[in-house]
Length: 265
Image (cartoon, rainbow, N blue to C red; front, side, top):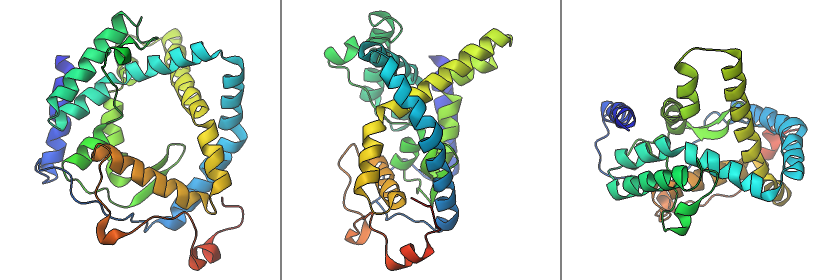
């Protein structure tokens, strides 16, 4: 726990060094996408990699994995992300929420058998999706331009930087950097990373299918969905209206349609 708090201090120092005093999140701004041409190309690549590789693997995984086992795997990785959620709450000065995450981790790690089960939720200890990017946003760090990352998908400059903090707090990453390296250790960690990715994709199979079928421009749909999801986390589900009352639509403009390269979703 002391090492987690120490890392929280380091990450919080990054916020202060950016000149952003802890004063709460600013009013939401509309999405900025000055790199749309590049983003669309990366989005197209990600979609093809998902369509022809990751999604089929996820469907096979879901088909052969019993639901109780799938739920336990999901619970395990959710519990493993405790340091990210805990530090995020500390940085936001939400100490009661941080204590709840700590209690949830202790209960699920012990009674829940290293996180395979989730008795904490039944006890009223609920999880969170807050991460370092959310903590940055809470303290007023602007999200910056929209950014699609290869393989990782939708993001923005603030959240891309926040991913570095998430990685530093990831127990799997930490485990790969301590102790002696060995082929066995490397295979186990790689297998855990792969299992987490496939399990996460399996949980989104229906959502992605519905999004593709219901949107005229899947790129704009994903962009809007990501922006609104992140705003919801920063404002605890009570985000004010975006500046100038702008609304987001997945329907492409005439200019968008003209600029869409052939084959893009």
